[in-house]
Length: 461
Image (cartoon, rainbow, N blue to C red; front, side, top):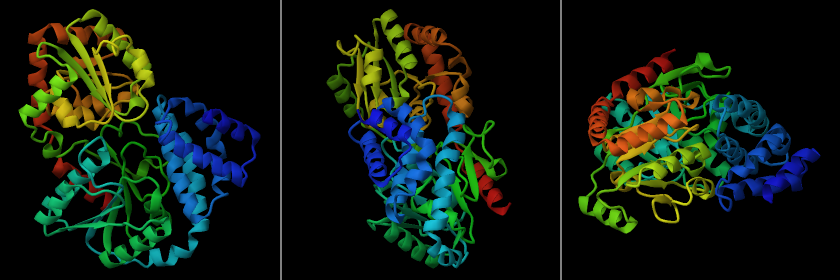
């Protein structure tokens, strides 16, 4: 088993080149072949203290790619103790990487410091996409629109895919420029980024990207501020400022607290609830065997967020409510959640799908359940925008997400959650009341002015 081999390498203390290559290859397999199987958690805990030694075995190109993948490896294996993981990953991964970049990419320091400062607000993102389950793209679109409406000039630099929503925005706004970095190597991408920024003369660079070429830029300290608009992990030592959504900003950890600022958690309404033809909804319900008198409990997230406890709650509800069905969807390994809700997967009362159109499938859902102990963010807002009430566990992991939930749908225990879900299923009047309250809550989700004000204040500090 690949995970056991990684533990052996960590235990041996031999961080030579062949072992480093094996670690890199195994982490790539974790994302592809093993679909983020959580059995790698022990391997992460064993390897992370050795990360700096392993990184030294790689050259400039491989090292950046390895560090970017290793960070995601460690972060996606965090199921509990979320705040402790912020500290552990910062110490084991981010600090060694910071020192490595300073040494290996020092030749670019002067040219980075020579980039002029102007009035352009520059965003750099992995993928400029607004559909599917890639939440950072939705935030980037929302933030860019807010800044454009506030009179700013904005350029977006996409390191990967670009979708039609961003292309349409670039056509409709004379103050918005869309650029793609298509170079294949890290060196070529970084040099292209430097050339582009030299032309743009940024007022500031904003990003959701923790590592990759943006981290090199930030570590080499340009004259303009670099700002991480955190998608979840925030404890990084190289960005000038770090924007925490109000769902993350309750008692953040780390040594950067003076550099944190709070931004609202929200998404543009047109992204939360785009138009879907009713005929398509009926067709997909028929295809999935969902009848009109079924009450559908749904949740959309990465499969590793569907914990054993989460599955246990759903199984108990299905045991008690014969008119209920469960609809779960998301990428990665389905084994754990399927085992948790058996035998209902076998008789089609529980459907576990891969990546789907959440706006189409979301219209099949009557009641949503937030994942726990790792909670979901924008996928719950997307369901609430469709007037679907969301039941959440009010535990430590919910952070500030409780502000975007109905108080009467917050639970303290698994038993309480089961009882509440059964009540929503069986009491149509209570469910209708929660639907109306959800609709009212989502009507207040417009925070453009708050975001622009928070960002401008942080840049001026």
